[in-house]
Image (cartoon, rainbow, N blue to C red; front, side, top):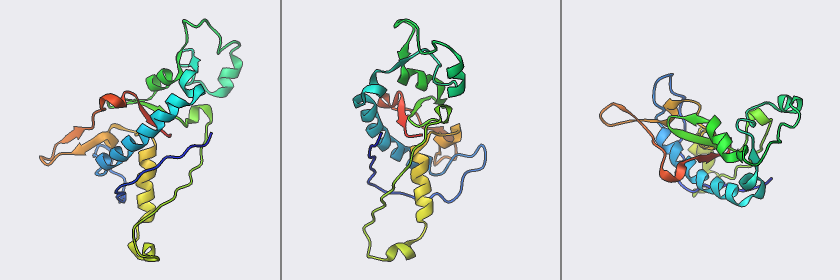
Length: 178
């Protein structure tokens, strides 16, 4: 399957990963980018026949392929026992109130490749002196993948307290690349 995701907007550099328990200082920025990709991936899931219509037995996607192969008739069962694949995936990947639907999952040995076209409004050759492109790409990759912990969905308030990023109504579930 081939598809194109686009993002046009600011892309801040990730300086360093936060220490455990600390909010990620770019969590809000990464989630804004994640929301842009979510809209596009949601459209992919709604227009691709397999992604849209495939139904599975609950929690079947979480089993490794070798285990699935050992269970005869695993994908069988009556239509009343199967649920949409998207719902099964969302029930397995939850973090800080978000139900996450990654398209590429290690549990199914799914892989992907990325071709990143990074365009900047700048003079030719200035990319050498502008620096920090690798950390900007890291921010982009972090926005494509699912948050690994709750601190990736926390922001530091001006008061010094931490606040959770909450899912919007259209982010239930939220679609991600990986």
